Length: 301
Image (tube, rainbow, N blue to C red):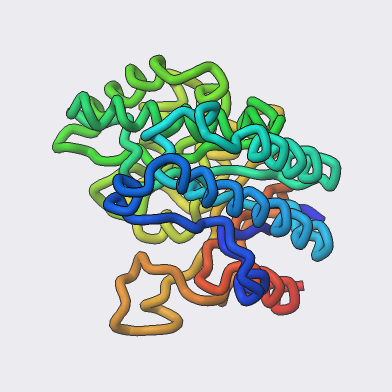
């Protein structure tokens, strides 16, 4: 098989059984109940993470993006200060060892507020802290400190000057922790005003040598400065000895709901991912999560 399929964060089959690894709370609740409550939620989440990884193994799923919500408000405390962290650390270790033993590739995709290219110092400072926390979780899990266990982000904005923004990204990158830098990847965008694979190759990869994640849906909506095939292979050239990973989704507006935004994801996949026969891992970004993956297997055998 040249393509290994994965999905992101929520497992709907298990969520129906009250197994979910993204239990959180609003800021007001955190302020009133504090890190002890965050620790209790985190323990629930990492226990659920192990169950999801076990479900993946039982269903021959080898690519999985973990939620960034494992630790609610994690930038507000140190993991080691949590009252139950020894138990949490044990669960993270068990989840990581099980994933590795069953050949699963785990990753993170922190949210849109992680912006290394921001011209605002406080935003960059918060981004660095958040990304380093993601790497720390992976370290506790014993996952490879390479793009095999990627922490994937977008550049974050052009701010009227793409070149200046890419230079800021590269400068901020140098402030990240060692195992954050060694896992970081960057992804092409879904707006014509943002960043294509070619732009990221010239402005980011050539400077700091981090891999580019090719997103097929974003390619269809982003800057049209090269063909799909050329963009795919240019991104592929940045992965070196690590297996390339891509994202695939379809437009909700095109297939499910004509009133939806074009960039919104459909529930299921209506087109196969074109990989030109190359070995790749593909995260399917669909509202139906693992159900979409199982249907994709049947639809595109």
